[in-house]
Length: 233
Image (tube, rainbow, N blue to C red; front, side):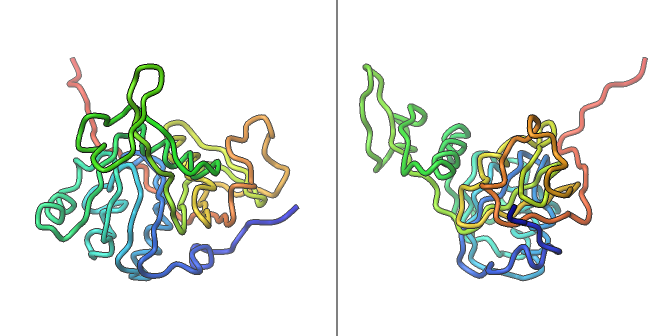
Protein backbone atom coordinates (compact mmCIF):
# COMPACT_ATOMS: atom_id res chain seq x y z
CA UNK A 1 0.00 0.00 0.00
CA UNK A 2 1.36 3.41 -0.99
CA UNK A 3 2.13 5.67 1.97
CA UNK A 4 0.98 9.28 1.62
CA UNK A 5 2.52 10.33 4.94
CA UNK A 6 4.95 13.25 5.08
CA UNK A 7 6.83 14.21 8.22
CA UNK A 8 5.97 17.91 8.41
CA UNK A 9 3.79 20.66 7.07
CA UNK A 10 6.86 22.07 5.36
CA UNK A 11 7.31 18.91 3.28
CA UNK A 12 3.58 18.70 2.67
CA UNK A 13 3.63 22.11 0.99
CA UNK A 14 6.58 21.47 -1.30
CA UNK A 15 5.88 22.94 -4.73
CA UNK A 16 3.74 25.81 -3.44
CA UNK A 17 4.64 29.10 -5.14
CA UNK A 18 3.35 32.51 -6.14
CA UNK A 19 0.34 32.95 -8.46
CA UNK A 20 -1.19 29.56 -7.64
CA UNK A 21 -4.84 28.70 -7.04
CA UNK A 22 -5.69 26.98 -3.76
CA UNK A 23 -8.79 25.31 -2.37
CA UNK A 24 -9.15 25.52 1.40
CA UNK A 25 -11.70 23.51 3.35
CA UNK A 26 -13.71 24.65 6.31
CA UNK A 27 -16.92 26.45 7.19
CA UNK A 28 -16.67 29.53 9.35
CA UNK A 29 -13.86 28.62 11.74
CA UNK A 30 -14.74 24.93 11.79
CA UNK A 31 -12.48 22.42 10.10
CA UNK A 32 -10.06 24.87 8.54
CA UNK A 33 -6.55 23.67 7.58
CA UNK A 34 -4.85 26.04 10.00
CA UNK A 35 -1.42 24.37 9.97
CA UNK A 36 -1.26 24.66 6.19
CA UNK A 37 -2.41 28.27 6.32
CA UNK A 38 0.27 29.09 8.89
CA UNK A 39 2.90 27.58 6.59
CA UNK A 40 1.61 29.63 3.64
CA UNK A 41 1.95 32.75 5.78
CA UNK A 42 5.48 31.72 6.74
CA UNK A 43 6.48 31.11 3.11
CA UNK A 44 5.06 34.50 2.12
CA UNK A 45 3.73 33.25 -1.22
CA UNK A 46 1.98 36.06 -3.09
CA UNK A 47 -0.79 36.78 -5.60
CA UNK A 48 -2.83 33.75 -4.58
CA UNK A 49 -6.31 32.85 -5.72
CA UNK A 50 -8.12 31.18 -2.81
CA UNK A 51 -11.31 29.13 -3.18
CA UNK A 52 -12.98 28.82 0.20
CA UNK A 53 -16.49 29.12 1.60
CA UNK A 54 -15.40 32.11 3.67
CA UNK A 55 -12.31 34.16 4.49
CA UNK A 56 -11.95 33.45 8.20
CA UNK A 57 -11.71 36.36 10.63
CA UNK A 58 -9.11 39.10 10.93
CA UNK A 59 -6.68 37.12 13.11
CA UNK A 60 -7.43 33.53 12.18
CA UNK A 61 -7.78 31.34 9.11
CA UNK A 62 -7.46 33.04 5.74
CA UNK A 63 -7.55 36.36 7.56
CA UNK A 64 -3.85 35.80 8.31
CA UNK A 65 -3.06 35.68 4.59
CA UNK A 66 -5.19 38.76 3.97
CA UNK A 67 -3.28 40.67 6.64
CA UNK A 68 -0.08 40.18 4.66
CA UNK A 69 -1.74 40.92 1.33
CA UNK A 70 -0.87 37.46 0.01
CA UNK A 71 -4.27 36.89 -1.60
CA UNK A 72 -5.00 38.46 -4.98
CA UNK A 73 -8.47 36.96 -5.45
CA UNK A 74 -11.05 35.33 -3.19
CA UNK A 75 -13.66 32.96 -4.58
CA UNK A 76 -16.17 32.58 -1.76
CA UNK A 77 -19.77 32.26 -0.68
CA UNK A 78 -19.80 34.18 2.60
CA UNK A 79 -17.33 36.82 3.77
CA UNK A 80 -19.20 38.79 6.42
CA UNK A 81 -16.96 38.32 9.48
CA UNK A 82 -13.68 39.78 8.26
CA UNK A 83 -13.14 43.55 8.50
CA UNK A 84 -9.84 43.42 6.61
CA UNK A 85 -11.48 41.51 3.80
CA UNK A 86 -14.18 44.19 3.57
CA UNK A 87 -11.59 46.97 3.55
CA UNK A 88 -9.51 45.37 0.79
CA UNK A 89 -12.56 44.58 -1.32
CA UNK A 90 -14.03 48.09 -1.09
CA UNK A 91 -10.66 49.70 -1.79
CA UNK A 92 -10.10 47.55 -4.88
CA UNK A 93 -7.02 45.83 -3.44
CA UNK A 94 -8.73 42.43 -3.50
CA UNK A 95 -10.61 40.82 -6.38
CA UNK A 96 -13.71 38.98 -5.16
CA UNK A 97 -15.96 36.44 -6.85
CA UNK A 98 -19.05 35.71 -4.77
CA UNK A 99 -20.78 32.42 -5.58
CA UNK A 100 -23.99 30.84 -4.22
CA UNK A 101 -22.96 28.31 -1.60
CA UNK A 102 -24.47 25.31 -3.35
CA UNK A 103 -22.80 26.31 -6.62
CA UNK A 104 -19.47 26.62 -4.85
CA UNK A 105 -19.90 23.10 -3.52
CA UNK A 106 -20.95 21.72 -6.90
CA UNK A 107 -17.99 23.29 -8.71
CA UNK A 108 -15.69 21.60 -6.17
CA UNK A 109 -17.50 18.30 -6.56
CA UNK A 110 -17.36 18.53 -10.35
CA UNK A 111 -13.59 18.96 -10.19
CA UNK A 112 -13.36 16.04 -7.77
CA UNK A 113 -15.20 13.58 -10.02
CA UNK A 114 -13.76 14.82 -13.31
CA UNK A 115 -16.76 16.70 -14.72
CA UNK A 116 -15.86 19.84 -16.72
CA UNK A 117 -19.02 21.73 -15.73
CA UNK A 118 -22.50 21.46 -14.22
CA UNK A 119 -25.86 23.12 -14.80
CA UNK A 120 -27.50 24.78 -11.81
CA UNK A 121 -30.67 26.90 -11.43
CA UNK A 122 -29.00 29.08 -8.78
CA UNK A 123 -28.29 32.58 -10.04
CA UNK A 124 -30.34 32.48 -13.23
CA UNK A 125 -31.71 35.94 -14.01
CA UNK A 126 -29.18 37.66 -11.75
CA UNK A 127 -25.69 39.13 -12.13
CA UNK A 128 -24.31 35.68 -11.33
CA UNK A 129 -25.46 34.45 -14.76
CA UNK A 130 -24.12 37.36 -16.82
CA UNK A 131 -21.90 36.17 -19.66
CA UNK A 132 -22.58 32.49 -18.93
CA UNK A 133 -24.30 29.86 -21.01
CA UNK A 134 -27.89 29.12 -19.98
CA UNK A 135 -30.14 26.26 -20.98
CA UNK A 136 -33.69 25.09 -20.36
CA UNK A 137 -34.41 21.65 -18.90
CA UNK A 138 -38.03 20.56 -18.40
CA UNK A 139 -39.26 24.14 -18.50
CA UNK A 140 -36.71 25.47 -16.00
CA UNK A 141 -33.66 27.60 -16.79
CA UNK A 142 -30.16 26.64 -15.67
CA UNK A 143 -26.75 28.30 -15.67
CA UNK A 144 -23.60 26.48 -16.81
CA UNK A 145 -20.90 26.64 -14.14
CA UNK A 146 -17.40 25.31 -14.81
CA UNK A 147 -15.49 23.05 -12.44
CA UNK A 148 -12.74 24.73 -10.47
CA UNK A 149 -9.13 24.32 -11.52
CA UNK A 150 -6.77 24.45 -8.54
CA UNK A 151 -3.12 23.64 -7.95
CA UNK A 152 -3.50 22.54 -4.32
CA UNK A 153 -6.39 21.60 -2.04
CA UNK A 154 -5.74 22.02 1.69
CA UNK A 155 -8.01 19.89 3.85
CA UNK A 156 -8.51 19.29 7.57
CA UNK A 157 -9.70 15.90 8.86
CA UNK A 158 -10.15 14.39 12.31
CA UNK A 159 -8.45 11.05 11.70
CA UNK A 160 -6.47 9.65 8.83
CA UNK A 161 -4.11 6.79 8.08
CA UNK A 162 -0.84 6.71 6.21
CA UNK A 163 -2.63 5.54 3.05
CA UNK A 164 -4.64 8.78 3.05
CA UNK A 165 -8.01 7.40 4.16
CA UNK A 166 -9.94 10.05 6.08
CA UNK A 167 -12.62 10.45 8.73
CA UNK A 168 -14.17 13.85 9.43
CA UNK A 169 -15.83 14.82 12.69
CA UNK A 170 -19.10 16.67 13.06
CA UNK A 171 -19.45 20.00 11.28
CA UNK A 172 -15.87 19.77 10.01
CA UNK A 173 -17.38 17.46 7.41
CA UNK A 174 -18.27 20.50 5.33
CA UNK A 175 -16.31 21.60 2.26
CA UNK A 176 -13.37 19.40 3.23
CA UNK A 177 -14.56 16.09 1.68
CA UNK A 178 -15.54 17.58 -1.68
CA UNK A 179 -12.20 19.37 -2.02
CA UNK A 180 -10.29 16.09 -1.69
CA UNK A 181 -9.07 15.15 -5.15
CA UNK A 182 -10.46 18.36 -6.65
CA UNK A 183 -7.00 19.89 -7.23
CA UNK A 184 -3.75 18.67 -8.74
CA UNK A 185 -2.41 17.96 -5.23
CA UNK A 186 -4.50 17.34 -2.10
CA UNK A 187 -2.75 18.00 1.22
CA UNK A 188 -4.49 16.82 4.39
CA UNK A 189 -3.69 17.70 7.98
CA UNK A 190 -5.20 15.45 10.65
CA UNK A 191 -5.57 15.55 14.40
CA UNK A 192 -4.68 11.85 14.63
CA UNK A 193 -2.58 9.95 12.08
CA UNK A 194 -2.67 6.15 12.27
CA UNK A 195 -0.92 3.30 10.46
CA UNK A 196 -2.70 1.99 7.37
CA UNK A 197 -5.39 -0.51 8.28
CA UNK A 198 -6.16 0.97 11.71
CA UNK A 199 -9.33 2.78 10.61
CA UNK A 200 -12.65 0.97 10.41
CA UNK A 201 -13.38 0.76 6.66
CA UNK A 202 -17.07 1.34 7.37
CA UNK A 203 -16.30 4.71 8.97
CA UNK A 204 -14.08 6.15 6.23
CA UNK A 205 -15.55 9.20 4.48
CA UNK A 206 -12.84 9.75 1.85
CA UNK A 207 -10.60 6.98 0.47
CA UNK A 208 -6.88 7.54 0.13
CA UNK A 209 -7.00 7.61 -3.68
CA UNK A 210 -8.10 11.25 -3.40
CA UNK A 211 -5.12 12.26 -1.24
CA UNK A 212 -1.49 12.86 -2.23
CA UNK A 213 0.01 14.03 1.10
CA UNK A 214 -1.07 13.65 4.72
CA UNK A 215 0.56 14.85 7.93
CA UNK A 216 -0.09 15.12 11.65
CA UNK A 217 -1.03 18.67 12.60
CA UNK A 218 0.92 20.16 15.50
CA UNK A 219 -1.88 22.18 17.06
CA UNK A 220 -5.50 23.03 16.43
CA UNK A 221 -7.52 25.87 17.91
CA UNK A 222 -11.17 25.17 18.70
CA UNK A 223 -12.59 28.63 18.10
CA UNK A 224 -16.26 29.60 18.07
CA UNK A 225 -17.03 32.31 15.54
CA UNK A 226 -20.26 33.58 17.10
CA UNK A 227 -20.89 32.64 20.72
CA UNK A 228 -24.46 32.95 21.97
CA UNK A 229 -25.22 32.38 25.64
CA UNK A 230 -28.15 33.00 27.94
CA UNK A 231 -28.22 34.35 31.47
CA UNK A 232 -28.63 31.90 34.31
CA UNK A 233 -31.94 32.20 36.13
